[in-house]
Length: 538
Ligand SMILES: [Zn+2]
Image (cartoon, rainbow, N blue to C red; front, top):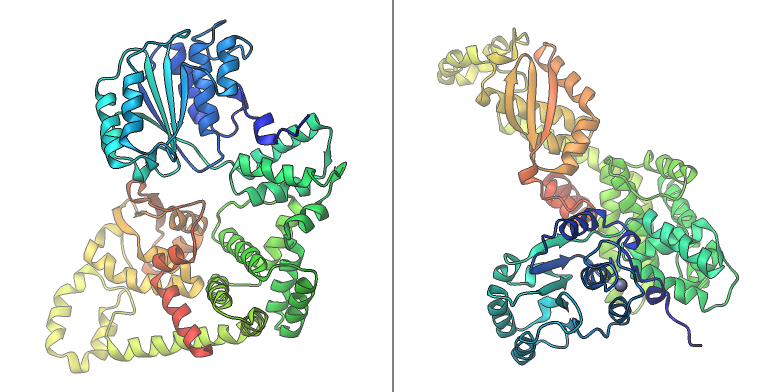
């Protein structure tokens, strides 16, 4: 018997087997139970997360001869079987990628005239619907405006932004999620048990991570490993089959960077290359690793296999600042491009690592840059360095006339004691915010950056409420709430409680995958720093 690939063998056949999409199964089951079936559905999400499987299960639920409509199709009647095999005459699967033309849709329209032969519903599953041509879309739209009775459309797409809004608005839309690492591991464990294969958990963790949110990819990676015919899948097997560099190596590299040991890093690099590891793969792995460090530092959850690994990560994290990590990411991204354009990739990589090992020197450059900048600001502007209160406004105007000798009068203006927060108005808050941002930046650059982006919402009962439109920033600010409250209270010499709110409407973070460009955009300060330090070492 020929080998049946795992993704097909273990394709989910009932709702409960579709992993990590509970938010969708719940609603679909409800619509069946309440008999509120829509005429068109749009399933969106990355590849390999269960869109087509869900469409088939939904179809079986509606057309099952034994129980249908039901939330638990029998999977043994003729209709269920035909849907599983993909040859039901009433559940028609169309690949949008190969049937892109208007003629294909016209054929479909003609066919729609015939009622279902042996089922309750005629269901069209159109995969990769975004690939249809514009004229095909328009023809489809006509059908959707007046669909014949008992006809259901299920569109699946990885790129909903390419589907006409007029189509989307006629569909009930479901957004499928990337499947979390732990869910993929669970499914792989399940498969191993059924296939009678032993696998250590670390091996499955590596596969799940490499699959990057796609269950189908995870299963096809398993197929590749099983082709080696091993009875037990070991962590080391997965490393060598896919040429993955283990995290321990990245740990070592980071430790050597913090210890300023370029020679040791170069030796590690040579060792990897001797073993046959691909240099680009290695850099990708290192980038991913450092990105995880950065996420860990700013308080975003990252997948780790064990508590001990998390501890190791935390230890390495403590040796680097956010600026260091951003700088490393930036340098490695540049190295990757340089390698692509070079006929001596090893030399480029070696140069990059020597550069990276000089990170400690760069930290002092960072300090130097900051102090120079402070100096410029002090001489250039006469920005208030201390709180300026409302009652001094009149004085300030008067002082404008005698600006030349305002050094002493400025001291008079400053009064640290506030009776209550209400004495501040928005204008004055903004002025004080400049000073507070600076103070926070001294603690943590990113913290200051996010604080600067906050909008004042409310000032009452000595509670200061600030709003931010970035989840990333909201998390970081909330994590440092007591530090921020302390600084603000000291600044105004008043016991002030600070409260942060997330502006959901403005939250446009891509939480699962922020890259260096996102982070740079969010933090012009850091972007500037990266640019300047890079031009210094180049
Ligand atoms: Zn059935």
